[in-house]
Amino acid sequence: MLSMTGYGRAEAQIEGRKWIIEIKSLNHRYIEIITRLPNAISPLEVEIKKRVGERIFRGRIEISVQADADSGPDNGVQYSLNVPLLRNYHSLLVRIKEELNLREEIDLRTLVRFKEIFVPSETRFDPAAAWGGLQKTLDEALDALIRMRQVEGEVLKKDFLARLDTLTRHLDSAKARAPRTVLETKQRLQERIRELTDGLEMDPVRLSQEVALLAEKSDVTEEIVRFESHIGQMEKLLQGHDAIGRKLDFLLQEMGREVNTLGSKSNDIAIAQDVIELKSELAKMREQALNVE
Image (cartoon, rainbow, N blue to C red):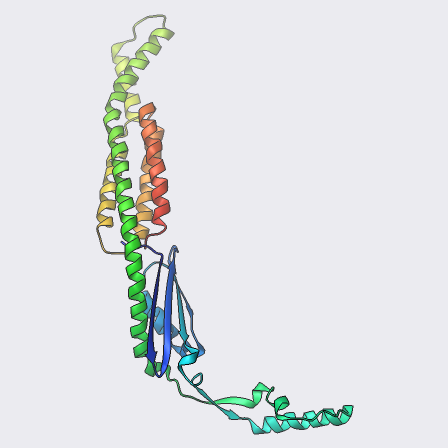
């Protein structure tokens, strides 16, 4: 069981430069992978996302790849001079000087301000050749991220199991109470009839029919059985090794429906109290499920 939050970092010397990869994961309903890459390796974005998507299945994943500026003499690029453009700039500056009768000299410091005269002529960094090293570094960062997600996942797992015990306790309480509610309903009905009929006894057969009808309407056996089944399914999920966040969401929704029906069917105060506690625990579990991959 994995949490969706975590952080991983790795670095390596690749193609003569130091590369640093950081990965951060946050809660998200689905999988979203966001990259921040230097221009030199932008062609590798698809491969990077694919590699991450093979190991992370849910969450917002933010990947940052940086090349240490101090690890190489330049940015992996050689430049050449655009001489025609340089001459054009110079002639324009001379014309401006003559037109405005300016005294300032046109020197080198003025000309180098025009960045367009310097053009990249050769890219020495080959992204395809560097992919092997970058992929290994990416895997190391992913390993660190997943380890953190596992540690947090174990904490979440313990919390879920403890809350399942609480759910089971209140469900057992309601289950034990349910059969007695029929007898108590019959007694309340008899007393109410005596009050309304000034002490006259009602036909036993008719009374039994009315009690049977009320018992059928208030029978919560089906809801309790389904709720117990959902608890069993959730326990199996928590012991597995797959991404279970969406399955947890679904089971918690189903458990919520059963509890709502249980509360609407039963008029018993004790069962109503158990229903309140069940709803409270389910609400807390739904919040925790938002953190599970």
